Length: 288
Image (cartoon, rainbow, N blue to C red; front, side, top):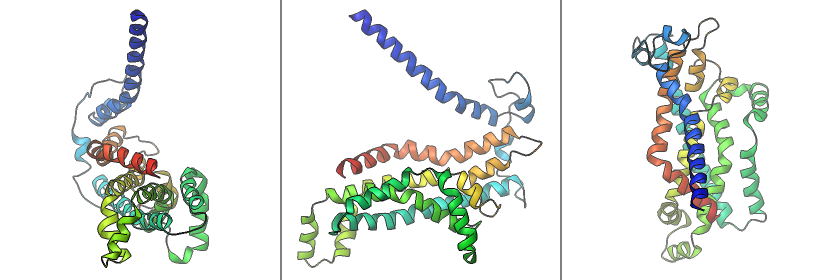
């Protein structure tokens, strides 16, 4: 019996080790490529060490700040990503929380079905809605000049993640007893005051979780900016990294450096707030 358990444990550890190596190998390859000179990325066989070594791949992202330089395009794409992701997060939290509160507290027939419809909208693949969004923007809404703007990206990002925000936040609102609001109204507080001062503080874990999740999903989006905002004035970090891949010259070292720099914000968020994201989503789903 002990030998059988030991054998199963060894097999389990071996599987875990293989999965870990499979996951970390591309990350390691990305790191060493970002630390190589260009000649080191085109030699065969490829070296698993960063030789010849250089920091210049990261330096070009922040130096020689002139029009059309790599540093100018990188910082411009970084600003676009921050604006689009932050705006999407704020809009989703405001409108998603408001909709979730109404679905939780108001006496609406079929509100459970409405919530599931919102959630089902998140199940639709992005590629299935790109063409409808494109046609709607350039044909029927052409007069608004939304194409190739951060405004359009924020609207589209919000439409993809709003359903999840409503679903999680409604679970939190449902878990809060109505007696708390009724007691506040007896003391003279309006519904808005009780919402802001009592209900929202109690749902802070859900707000944090949905806000961070919305930011992450908006940050690394590539397909939507590629189709809806391909001009250099609105492209984000993933699109900028893609643009480094020229027709005849592939700067793999600079592409790897750009990829690592763009991954820093999501990695930091997961490292410092990952447990809040998991606990917030789990609590909201269970309570709902």
